[in-house]
Length: 408
Ligand code: MG
Image 1 (cartoon, rainbow, N blue to C red):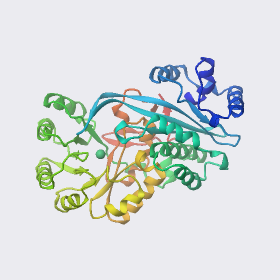
Image 2: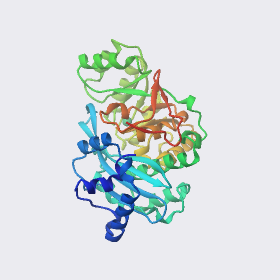
Image 3: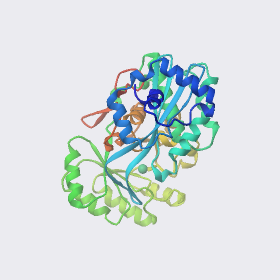
């Protein structure tokens, strides 16, 4: 596999190595020596090394928690290059920082990922600082998911993407050890994976028409980012070339509830089936008013981070959008799905811009949802993996053990 064995490769390439073994130089030397002796470097493919060094400008983020026990966790910053400039109601960007993580155990390797879109306030530096605090030595095996993830969650508040990276890697690892895909660990039928929506970015009507024509044959649902003065123009441009169902995401962009309701009715008449986070998360009373009158489900995204948020959202929204990077990973996402269902709420699963590692992890739970918005891996130009696929617009899960990822 690829870059984690990097520890010896980077040494060979005379690059500075930092952040290993919690600063313990004896452990660091011992780990490097063992890694080299174990031939870990041999498993790195030259193509991936070249790709990583192209995309990773600095080495200081390379790290590991070397363990004398059985689990060894290593990580590496990696910047995702977006295929197109990503624009929502409040900003635009061309890259997304991530930290790619790996946990090795008895010859098996689990992969995880922390995606860190800047607007969420998480940073690569903060993620690395958090990972350096994690000590997996105290756990006898990766099967102790509940104990391990509870411990990880209590190290520091926040840092959900770092926690999700560990959760995803552990699920991948446990699946491989049990020789079962992750979806089967949760008793799910992969044939029930839903269609995923695909986001058409905000742009001029000509470009929007062009983009819509390009993807209309591959997807069954299109998503539009709204909350700007050009919303109606965007929708008309899409409607001029396709009749596919649409969903919209205002990213808190509307502040007047009457205007938001008028807009939802206008959108409903044009085949919009769901609206995500129409108003600022602080305007709970206005959102409850809007949801009660809306002609479509209204889903919480920015308002809903973790399991503990759901209770206060009942009666305010029709449902919740769960993302692994918000909720610390697969295990809490599953608990959120069960709880939201018990409260009669709709369930959506979404993602950030991520490689196929984290998107496949999210897709593993997609048989449980009403709406899937898992196109984050399709929006990047430098994915590291092959994982979840698409068939007639529906998500398709690999049947290999764990997440079933293959290096690209
Ligand atoms: Mg959203």
